[in-house]
Length: 253
Image (tube, rainbow, N blue to C red; front, side, top):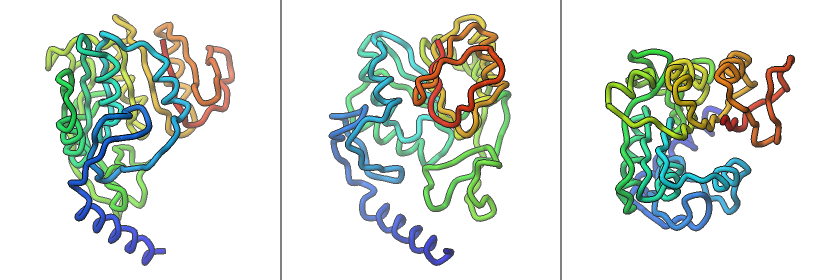
C-alpha cells in the first residue's frame, strides 16, 4: 500500500507539472460553458448530481451569495452566472492551494461580480491548523477526526473568523443565500453566524459530512428554518428521533 500511494503521488505531481496550465471549457455540470484550469481537484463528469439539479432549480437572480468553502471555484462560477449582473458572489476558501486555483479560474472568465477571500469560518476568530491530504492537496480540513493519516499530511496555518464578525470587519452586504462546504466544520460555522441567522435568516445550502448532527438541526430549527435533505427527499422536523441521515446536502429556508 505505501508503494501504491507513492506512485499515486508521483503521477499526480507529474500531471500537475505538465497539465497545470492547461485550460478548457467545461462541457457539462453547473458551470457548463465556462473555463477552468486542469489542476488538482479535476474530475471528468457527464451528468448532474441530485444536489446540482436542485441548485439549478433555484432562482438566484439579483441575489447576494456567500460561497463558504469555495474549493477551486466551480460553484462560484455557477453562482456568478446565476445571480446575473445585479447580483454578487463572495467566496471564502482557506486552503492556499485551492485559493490560488480559485482565483485563476475566476480570471479565465468574464465575471465582474465575484470577490474572494483567503479565510475560513468557524465559531470564533483564531489561527487554526489545516490538514492537507498529500495525495489530493485540494482536500483539506481543520477537523482532526476527518483527516487522512494526519501524521503524513501537510499542515498549514489558516485564518479563521466567525462569519458574524467578518461581515462587520469587511462591511459585506447581507447574503440571501449561504452555501457551506467545510469538510466537517459546518456546525462551527453555523455557531459563528447566529446573529445573521436570527436577524436575516438567509437560505442555507449545507454539505453534510457523516451522520447529521442533532445540535446542528436543533439550532437551525430554533431559527424557524424549514429543513430538507436533498438526496433522500426528506423533510426534517423537531420530532424525535432525527431520521438516520448521513452525508448529502441540507437545504434550509
